[in-house]
Length: 295
Image (tube, rainbow, N blue to C red):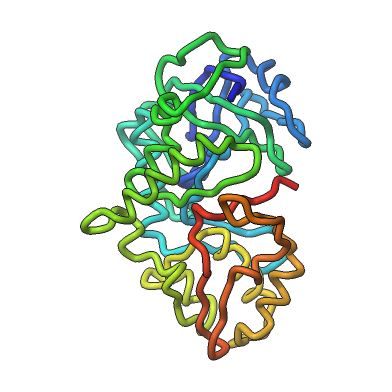
C-alpha cells in the first residue's frame, strides 16, 4: 500500500496531552499538511503542529469526552500511562513529566521522526503509522508500506508489548492488519500475558455498578471503543442505572463494522455486546476480528 511520507518532529511541550495513540507532530515543511487527503482538512497551530492519531491501534483513554455526555473521564490509568510513556520513550524522549491535568513536559524538547499516512479523520487528525529518527525516503511523496516497514513503527511496538489493542478500519489493507493481529495475539498469549492483557476483561466480562467500575484504578480494563460508548451511556443515564438500556444506546450510536474475515456489514455494537443480569457486560468478539467502517 502507498502512503504519504511526512518528515518532521514530535513536540509535546506547550500544553499537549499525549496518550498512547495520539501525539502532536510538526512537519519540516508545514505545507505538507495540505497533501494529506481525507474528509477534514488538517488545520495546524501557529507553530505548524497538528494532532496525529496512530493508525491501527487503540490505547486506554487518559482523558476522554465527546463534549455531549458528561465530564472528561479516563480508564484505569496504570496501562493508559504506560502506553503513553512507552510511545514517548520509543520516539526518543529521555525524560517524561506528566502533570495532574495530563499535560506532559519532556526532554529533549522535540525529537525527529516521520509519518506514513493515508488521510485525516473526521476530527481533522492525521491518521498515521509513526516512525522515529531518519525516514526511509524524502518527505512529501508516497511510498510503498509493507510488513517490514510497519514493524518499524511505534504502532506495531505498542501492540507487540501489549499496551494497545488492535483497532482496524477499512482503509488499512488486510496484509498490514494481519501483522498487527499477529503481534496482539503473541502479546496476549505470552506467559504471563504482556501489558494490559493480564487485566483485560473485554471478552470475559465485568460487573458494571456505575462509572467508577471502568474508571477507578481497580476498574475493568476493556476495549477503549467499548469504554467510550459505555462512558457516554453511564454519564447520560440516571445514577446507578442498569445496563438494560445500553443496547439501545449502542444501536443509536450506529457504529458500522464487519466480523473478519468476510462478514456482512453490521450496524450497532449491540450486535457484539452481551449483557446479563442487568449489570454484567462482555464483548462476544475480540478486537482483532472487528473491522470498522470509515463513515
